[in-house]
Length: 328
Image (cartoon, rainbow, N blue to C red; front, side, top):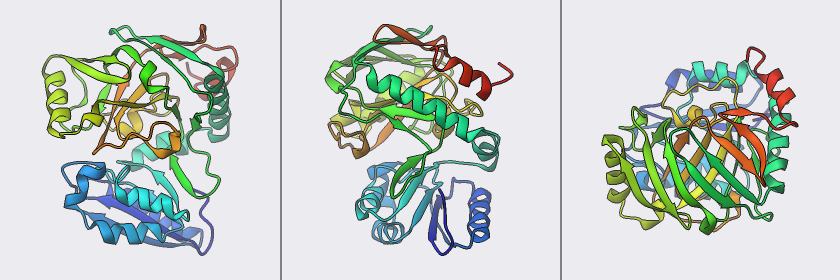
């Protein structure tokens, strides 16, 4: 986060977050001569806007909006809440979403990663995607979906901190396709979060998609839990596909923690519900947000192969991929 001497860093966490890691961050802040404040609340049953009835919203808004850096470690995230929106609107804070981050995950996904090479890899992936208009991908478990990109919408390379605004953990490149062009079947076969009773999936969840909206949820027990949860929120915008992301962090493992799962090497992830203003898309507003992982995809961008069975095979990416994952 490029914390400088004298800056104020607010670390938020909750009763389900890793307090030891929050204390580690606090020590690191002290080492660079900055000022820290840890804010911890009881974990609510929901995330985003749906969590607000259980939180001291006005106090949290004031604290994070006045910070130079806000590091969110909450397991039940404040991302997409009015707390998050007000902090970004204030235009002062460098915010990073590290929801559910643990010490082990930080070592694997940051400490042991060649950050400069990964940022180079992400920028190439970002450019290839920005230049592509039509995309098509499949997975062995039944995903078969097509969509189109809008060249005016940014493709975001996560982890490159350059000033006030929103940042995510390195190892992800994401964007919002043209929503009404998303058509086909998306199968979540890695993990889904929320709802919290799912996480790692024993059985896949199949989403039928028309014009960017989920029109049916098929499968067994997991699909019923997911369908019931979406319905329980009482918000039709929760069925909207908000963004898609590449996972490309060589240290990430499929653990059931969405922060790490959506960065698993070679996966693709879809977000449903609330849509960040940073995507400069339709600005879908929903009561919550959910992310689901598709594993081992094969993806074509304008007919050119980018990923094959979960491995980056595009000529501009292959050598960097080998440097990032030397044992593969």
